[in-house]
Length: 468
Ligand code: HAM
Image 1 (tube, rainbow, N blue to C red):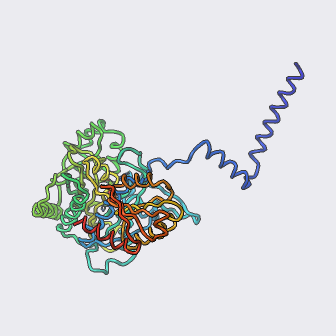
Image 2 (spheres, protein in one colour):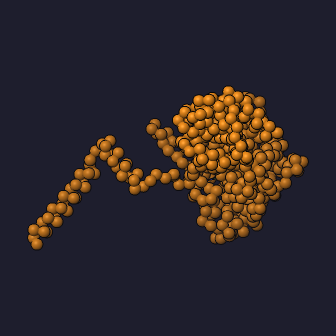
Image 3 (tube, rainbow, N blue to C red):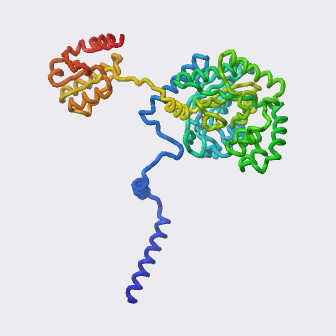
């Protein structure tokens, strides 16, 4: 027995000493590699929370939105701009507002090696205004119309329609105070959504006044809420001090009921804002654009003045900004706030993920591009010739499908069938030697032998005839 006790103690001591030693061991390259191998086996790498992969079968939606939004924007005079994915943190603090959720809770910030503080862009507007000022765009003929598209980052609580990396298409018009510009922007935005095949979207619109009339309204709003403070949610109690306008778009039940009865900004606008808003609505009427005057719409960014608006999906009732496909409005003070000249502006951003969800909900059909022809090969000689013929077909402008890793003609033709092509071209050993190619009509199964030299001309003729 005593012998046994001794061994146990020894073992324990040895283990403890060993583990202490391993902590102080230098992480040599070999050790790091070994550790990485161990972790990757037990924890396969995953995408970060709140992000997603766009898989090939989803790309048709993305492509349609990218192409159509930019094309329509261009037709209406917008020029493309690309801004950095990260900017000085201060830009968003000053631009979006220090008391907004985006800046308070959702910024992805980091210090670079020189100690400078940066943030991943949570939106486009502040960056575009920074670019407008920095590049002296105020000297160009005004207004400047800019279009941007790309990823943005917000440390949000991930859920349906809310991601940490998400995408927007974005339009800004900088340099005009004319209410016609607000209405024209809304028209362009609705035109863009139309080209996505979306129907019956709701335009929600409001005015949140300017630096002259809003402070007076906020006093009225605070007075209204003071007697109801105890019924407010925790966030709203805080917002009452920091950002009282945001009480109007709280989704908590009790707060929402209070917000429905709250005094509205449109009843408290100064003459200038009142006239501006009236004109925007008149222009919308003129353009035949229906809207819902939503006095609870305030938007979640601090830079807005006068007109604010959102696009809501079909059939969404009541207040729920979570569902907005996109939103925007006027920001007449932002250019000056960020160090430029006083320059009125208005803009909009559409969320691409939510737009795709709505397209799926409305069962929008997207026509997918089918290949014109399938190129099949048999045997080594056939494969070699087909490899060159593949390039010749592509250079001649055909959309060609092929699978050189498959040897069996049966499985290649099955693929061609699946892709819905009308013609398959087959090159085997014999055809490679005879310099011919087999034309197979996939509908009738009929086959013809054509000279390789004439094959491209012949295929063009047949495809052209079928498309008439
Ligand atoms: P926003 O309302 O913050 O406005 O965002 C616009 C749209 O982006 C939302 O309506 C929504 O569709 C989408 N979105 C926002 N956050 C997320 C998220 N976490 N996940 C998925 N989609 C999201 C702006 O960004 C302003 N910069 C718009 C603007 C341009 N105002 C003037 N010019």
